[in-house]
Structures are given as C-alpha cells and as structure tokens.
Image (cartoon, rainbow, N blue to C red; front, side):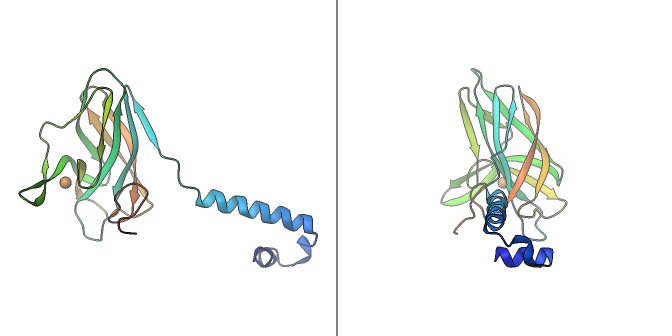
Length: 179
Ligand SMILES: [Cu+2]
C-alpha cells in the first residue's frame, strides 16, 4: 500500500526499488502515522498556585444556544481560591453551574458565590457536576475545534485558557459517552 502510494505520488516505481529505500520510506511513513494518531498532550495552564488542566467543552448540535465547559482545577497553595466567573469568545456570557439530583430530578443552578477551590485540593468540573455554562452561543461548537476563553478567580485573577471541543455527549475530554 505504501509502495502504491509513493508510486502514485512520485509517478514511477523505480524510485524505491532497493529494499533499503523501501524500508526507509516505510519507517518514515509509520513515524508520520504515529505522530498523526498520538493523543494530543493534555494542556495545562499555571496561574499562581492554581493548575488548570485540560479545559474542554462539548460539541453542540446545530442551533444550540448553550454548551457545557469543563476543566480540572488544582490548588497547590495553602489558602483557598474561588472560581468566580469566566468568558469564552464564542459565548455571550458564562455562568458557573452546579448539577445535582434534587427530589429525584437532575437539575442545575447557577452558583451565585462561585466555586471554592480548596487549599491543597482541587475541583473537577465535569458533566453531571460543576460546570461552566456557555450562554448565548454565537456559533456551534465543532468536535476537534478549540476556542479561547478565561477563568476568573478571586485570588489568581483572570486566567486565559483554550478550550478544546470533544464530541457531543462526551463524558470527559478524551472519550465519547456510550462508545
Ligand atoms: Cu448548566
């Protein structure tokens, strides 16, 4: 297959006649394939005592006006901080939400006072739990894309982040739900 590919690409077979040349090309091609399929390294942002790991969002079906966004926020410091807001270039505004089962019904509500990031601890924003709610979406979120935004903390201030877009229904940054 590689032979055929290169023959097609270069127009003649004679170019890679020797076994050594073929092996070299095959190795090179394999290297490219590995590069292309290796998972993207988790992106991490440091802001003071905080580590913000892999900000991500869920892709949205066309016409959706809201989307959930998530990240792992760790606090290496000895004092708590507080997530008090955020922004996203593709959203009119961003709220911090909590999702919980209340009287047997899954509901979500805005956290008016934000979300504490405990000292020497952390909080995971994830589907079914705490999340950022991107409101008034200006465009659909497309799987594989990314967008710029910020997380705003009481102490660490405004931290620029890049959200990567995972598939619709994804339960974490790397895996689609039910697949
Ligand atoms: Cu929400």
